[in-house]
Length: 178
Image 1 (tube, rainbow, N blue to C red):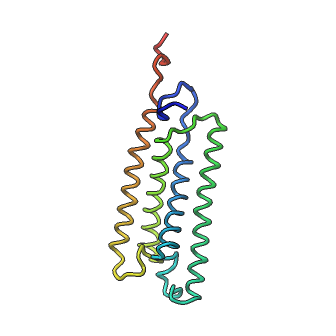
Image 2 (cartoon, rainbow, N blue to C red; image 1 turned 90 degrees about the vertical axis):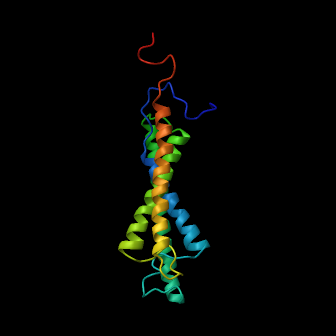
Image 3 (cartoon, rainbow, N blue to C red; image 1 turned 180 degrees about the vertical axis):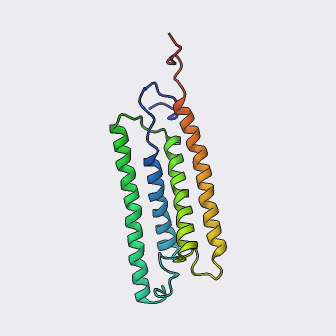
């Protein structure tokens, strides 16, 4: 393996698909949210801000746990889709992604997950907030959205560096070379 995984390749194959990295990011970002915020910290569950399902009752906690389970199935499907698209891309003869190319897309996907989940579930539907256990959860929701935006920007910067490196012609292999 070369020392610099982002080094240009002499392969004429097409660049890797961006879909697998984005799908991995959506799925892994969702897993991180579900495992850390729902299960470990227990700040909220999928429908913990819906009045009919309070987490302070066994029945409410059962509904929230079921909804969390469906949420984890969805995030798992994103990871499976990422794996399928990666394999399909390689079977099409595309190049394998460099670490920067791929990891940047994963971080973008995680950020997109936070932005979409934060806007839809926290703001539009109001089914839960980042901190349902505190009064005035808006500041936590805004922080979650800001973190998602930061992930997208950071991921884009990392991915762009990886893409630029993968697009560089190898010395002595350019079309003008004899």
